[in-house]
Length: 300
Image 1 (tube, rainbow, N blue to C red):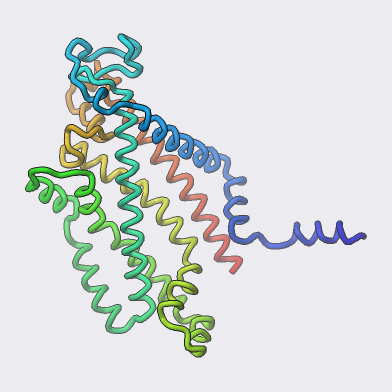
Image 2 (cartoon, rainbow, N blue to C red):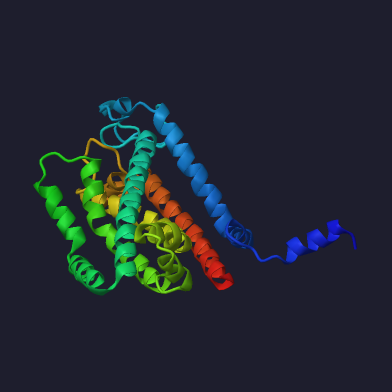
């Protein structure tokens, strides 16, 4: 057997690592692969289309086009009760909901990771004090508090929604990272780094954090769907984005009117389908990433 064949056999029997584990899971799960491609193309299409669409023109009231059906008078998906184009509102609303969900996910992840690493690494009194604070925040009715604060604001913007939802979204991530850090902080490589005089900051963020990357990626993926649902839920109830700003939740809220629910389905159904497909796609991708993370942990 020559060296080339030996090398090929060696590569075939070499255990998968890193991205190879993730790619293997996606190849095995065709639904997860399709979901990843679908939501990626959908998000890219939404952001590209949002730069082309004129928001002011979309939100202009046109009483002559009131409740226009799909395909009539140039309306691709019809019009609402003010003659505003549903297709344009769907694109802008999807972009707004995605941006808000991504911002909440990033902010909550940064706060949760930092606090989780600190509490898990130092443990002791630091862990006890911060955990009691997190326990108190967890028992608060976050959704009701958000609604109450929005109700008191005369003018609010997407930034206010991001801040309000991020105030509570970091708790679960911090507890997850803390539990994993408690285990990692007692491993031999951490003890060796301390013996060599490496600073705690470098140990936490250069050695412990990379070993938590798999679980963090999985959590971020699933949190994105949850945060998107939280924003659309608030907008559906009328406490999310302002009425002048298109949102998926605002479009779905039209379904509260029985007449629109039955006879004017084109107003709310496209937004509802978009939310459903995004949620399902993200969850399938998250499940594949979770299996990959579990496989990587088994492989060490």
